[in-house]
Amino acid sequence: MTTTATRTAAAELAAFCAELRWDQLGDEVRARTTELLLDLLGVALGGSHQPSSAPAREVALRLGGVGTASVVGTAKQTTAVWAALANGTAAHALELDDVTTQSSLHPGVAVIPAALAVAEEAGARGVALLEAMVAGYEVTMRVGNALNPASAYARGFHPTGVAGVFGAAIAAGRLLRLDVEQLTRAMGIAGTLASGSLEYLSDGAWTKRLNPGWAAHAGITAAHLAQAGFSGPASVLEGRLGVLHAYSDEPLPGRLLEDLGAPLQMMRVSIKPYACCRYNHGLIDCVLSLRREQALQPDDVERVRLGVLSGGALLVAEPISQKRSPRNVVDAQFSAPYAAAAALVIGSGGLDAYTPEHLADARIQALMQRTQCYRSASLDAEYPKRWPAEVELQLRDGRVLSRRVEFATGEPENPVPRAALVDKFVGLAARPDAAALAQRILRIEGEPDLYGLSAALRG
Image (cartoon, rainbow, N blue to C red; front, side):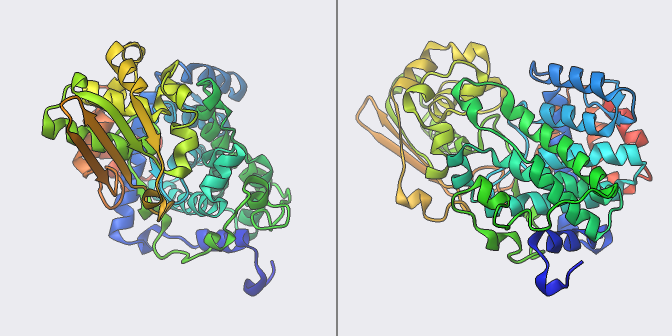
């Protein structure tokens, strides 16, 4: 290895992650880590029943054969690399997995399926899984921060898929006990496996759900290749032809190592209460609060104006004609007009709002046609660190109601209480032992291995 002064960003991140120890992390970090594990496993269990999860599961079991890694939502096991693909794809199917602002991606859905599968295969302790999670989140989010999400989106790339493979590789590498040099190589290899297209926006295809599953699968592959001695470029991130320059027109390489460890990136993760793109969440908060306070009915509203962030407009507001006419659930999950209309009509942004029946609701369809989206310098002023949202409702009686939120529900500044996280898990797991299983997950640091918990997840 080269000296610290000349080490690449990948080498610096690898060294930092190699030294992370559970007993040296603060109480808040430890609590947050177990909460994020609980949340992701809940959405994976719920997502395993979605139509898009079945083919991913079928392929994983066929190609992976017999193994010791759980395929969540079934009683079956396969090899870790294929279980991670199935579980990552399932966990992203509901659009309810954790998310970030500055990196504008979903870290847990790539990192946790990779870490859980390798931990099961390696017979690791609960604490080792949690340490791998912290390391994986740190790398995923820092790579995402440096990509500059708005620029990555404009190029047609999904930051979760691009950055997630690096975090998955680090998480898997920690559990495989790779040293710093091997972890650096794993990141170099991960760079050639990084992928994730946004073209699903054209027709509501399922490929967005595959992106984190592939990142988890590829990250494990990268870690094993590094362990076997395969080489990868240490300058994979900031190099002349590295990932930042390949996937972004305006990369911010300084964010790779900025304030490393202070605080840990995991403490900047948001929980999702609504089953749609995070760029819609602040809008839903605004609409629900106005609906509740004013006892609004859909017919009361003449016109809806939604203030959207420029960084997310491509995802949820443009082209407006398409966003006013979603053809399927994926389209609806990425439509600001639908999110606002559904919130007004049924008073929800949860899973119950994203169904074919509601897509066909004439009241929702009519409201979408009366919805406009706009951008403003005020909303974009601190993006991507802050994601405010604005809504203006013009009523038929002449009144104009407006609302702005600075922090959507679930962001660190407006957190979801632990009790609500447990309720979310219980609802998504939809099984008699869900409450007990939630408590076992929250106490996972005391587990000497994952065999018991994994068996419970498959139960």
